[in-house]
Image 1: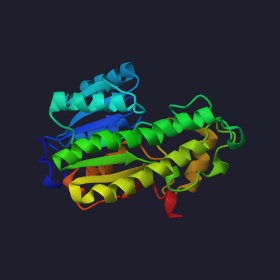
Image 2: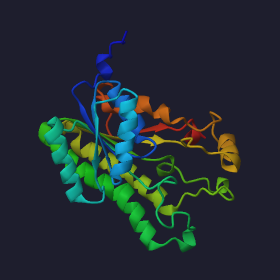
Image 3: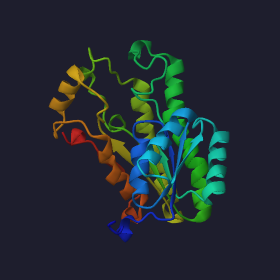
Image 4: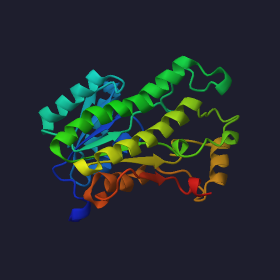
Length: 269
């Protein structure tokens, strides 16, 4: 027997576009929204991997989702995404700017130190993490403004709020380059700019900051991380679902320009 969805969190009839569709978190965002009635467009530059993510969702009973190829650094590609959304569903109500270079999807020299960090990698990371978010907000946000409603959720980062703790990375094979941190700080700033610009026009813009998401981490990095985080562990990828539903739904109808931090207390001390 299914449990009725609270009107606060009801997303039935809503359409959500999620970028970075083949990544670690996109499917989790999709599950959270579909569990509350939404239809999903998953977009990724790697269509084959995105198709596979959709196939896994289908195997688990989630059928209100389609996959689309897209390059978030291209405005033409964003226009194509909007047209696909309108063609298939008539609208886009929720945008989750989730695509980004991370330790799972690195630029060529992602691990380079600051003194030798190549301009090419700086530009590539900024283009995906920040410019891609800007373009998504511009194209899909304009559509939402025309409809007089919508929710944009920009995925920021722990290191868009505080600096990386540089001492936990040596010897772990994991790094946090300067461009990643700066780009994610930019995402938070862009969120606030647009939130205050569009708040009285029916379009809410907020960001969500995940902490460290466990993805097979082990050894020295995991030991160091767990010693520094108040909750004593990294986040499970499912633990962002509540935040996503909250920001996408009417439960957050008066939440404007907020950066929802889900980090196990990392930024609290």
